[in-house]
Length: 112
Image 1: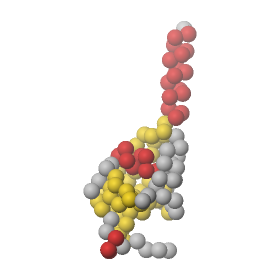
Image 2: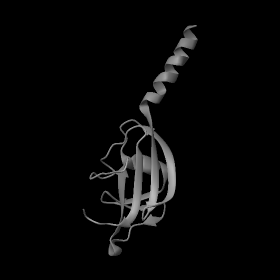
Image 3: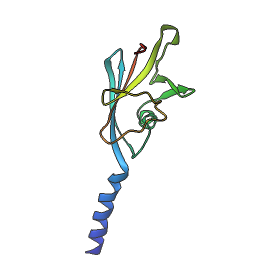
Image 4: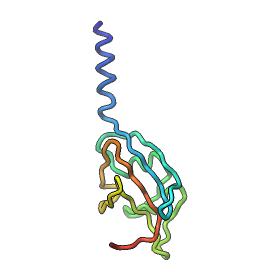
């Protein structure tokens, strides 16, 4: 009986340090890809993104995701939202929570 009790305990504690986050890539607002990523609690946005796709960055700015590159000459950059809210922090700083939806959009940057 003790063995069964221990197994149940391990099963219930294991998920507590993992979260599930949905990442979506868009090009000018049109969905091009979506993946659900399992990562550690308190992970940064960039962690899950790099688990799902090949990511290139320069000086903290994401320049390419899965071959889709920004074009600085045309003012086209990667930006992201979490649960449809604009985030002002970089992907290396911002934490995600369980069931967050992170959307990266490659589009012409317009300063609000």
